[in-house]
Image (spheres, rainbow over the protein chains, first blue to last red):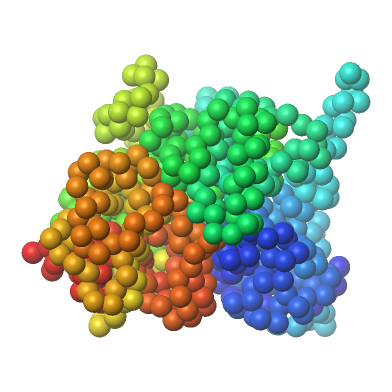
Length: 166
Length: 422
Ligand code: SF4
């Protein structure tokens, strides 16, 4: 996947990603306000396949998985950050949004064309360097390939039903 | 091999004798908690798609607290859905509009030392105050738990934080956590287990320990633990837990257990803390804030409006009245705590001081309903002051203890409660 990088700083919190005032609405409506406090042009400007790049502790704060869901709904293909808040990281993978930890994420310029390789755990900056990332554990890669936990559970339950016909 | 409390709790849930930090294990879940916002509204459609049943309704606790104030049709629909779902799924542990989930869980005796629990709320580490390995997860991960009864975990390292000596007058658990956020940052906990110990922690009542464990979320820990002791036992007995169900001895960190970090602080030296907008990590001693006028003082939330917190605020406000132009709002964390506060005369004290009482709910802390006005300067006992969380982008929220919030309401500016109490 090759796409534009949207760059944010450290400690981007889930209240910024999924603002509370819009939490009572569905994800289409909520996602239109995603990160508006930090970049009012973000939600409207993201093109499918774009990648969000951030500093330390991305997604800190609330457990609301709508944060990961809103980013996915806007079409972001992945989030690359220097580090993630643990809860957000779990939510992202569970919702099928790839999250890649990259100690050198700060080297990615805003608007750069970048490519993310999940299997190789690398980010390639077009016309420049490649950055190594922390590898995603195999069982989480599998979860991502299934498209998230809901899909994986569905497949597992279906397989179990086949093994044991009612 | 010596093990930390966190390791012992995880090992038990994983059905193992010991576990090593860093390894990935599958744990059996003893208790799963969720609320109106994170729970039924999100779980119901997913459960229907799967055609799956709940693994064990008796191990599920549902609390309505985020949308119960019901300002609009959407909020009322979310709570209505939770009620119908609880009935349809035969959830007997359903607590409807009687307080904030983490407090309701504790005061009803659901949390007992040795348990492994998850909550669909980021402040679920609150349960760690009882020697429970408890942490927050999102709704989809909760779906996995309520269908399978299991969850994966990377065995955490432990950061041991000791407070020795005694906290000074008008210094409390909230000051400790704001100080630690300032000192270590919002990711200082590294998504590991943080254990609080030392003589000053041992002297704290359960609700204060809950504040420590609760704000481990702000410190970026996965769970925040306090090893159980006689204080834990007494609280649980009061909450109706049978003596035979309270184990203390097995749930302690062994001497020589592996620690990722060990910090020892002098409790006596800690001053009341205030975190400036827009991060709990912007904490400084109250004395370092110059002349900061405030419009609103808010005593609310799981971390700042329990009975112990109400006692602190009332102690400062007794026989006094808030400054002209300051709005003081108090949202007791649970109906139970509110009832005791009423009996103790605390509510009368607060109301006489000019406080407006709000329902036993998340209220303004969540920012899901009523919100602070743009440009307002607020001092609040809540856990988070991220830009826009509780109000507009231009709303400025300072975080502090109930003592400091009450003192600031009295003076009309950020104020040191020690000066007021002298
Ligand atoms: S009171 Fe605030 S911090 Fe506590 S559960 Fe409610 S929204 Fe979360």
